[in-house]
Length: 364
Ligand SMILES: *Cc1c(COP(=O)(O)O)cnc(C)c1O
Image (cartoon, rainbow, N blue to C red):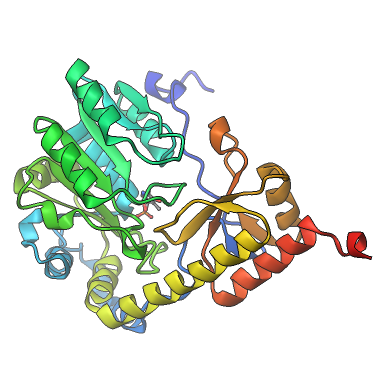
């Protein structure tokens, strides 16, 4: 605390990302990164962009990247907004499209950055409890809409940290149920098994889809995220961005991002590897007695009936395996969120858990 702080800083509770420890040999299954390196074409493109031209500012509109993203999604470049990671895109979305004089609705169990942005921009929110089975109940949202005004809706699909997907028909019910509010679908994990709402953009001017290259394109370190939506929504984001930072994406990020969007073969191969490993990981966890929520993401959310989440996370850490555990809200405290690693990493995790659950000494 300092008397030099602005009033808003006193009221902030910043987001706490999963740890990035500088310890060699760790099995890192705590932040949903890709366990495989990015496409070699990405590395090549970044090397080729690392020239004297770095003295020049990058294209403030990152047109080459927007075009590559538009091609991938079958949209127009004007329907694409890019930013320094989807976290930055989301921040602009909150300020440009979700801040109104009516509350923003989002699930009580969801990406914990949403309440942080809402606080930063001084927005009213309403937490919408997930159903008992951790599914998102669209009817609950529609009911709130009948009872009063709604400023906007945001949720991840698949949801984080549950990994559970919402069917496209359900997303569409929200879009038609709230024609006067922007509905933001945060599709950070959609490539691992959920249906994207990107195909609905031409029909729903209130839909904004947010994506990232951090997860399914293995580029968390490059910081590239984007949004897809009606040109009017994109214009709002551009206006905020141009009032904040003209060059959120540097020359290397633009070059790498373009190459990533163009390497479909790498993309298909990698997500197939991860979904296959996920299947084995889920089966292994179930064999150890875990209950695992149905995952459409590159992570699983699992609890053991006889062991607390904190205890398991701490014991795994002793064996140099990091997973994510959330103490709050209480309903998810028994769970571990485990990123799907390489097959070898998943096997090591299962062995470690077997050892924790049934110590060799107990078997003797
Ligand atoms: C990882 C994640 C993001 C952030 O992605 P970046 O592009 O790395 O900022 C956004 N939303 C959800 C739900 C995520 O899990």
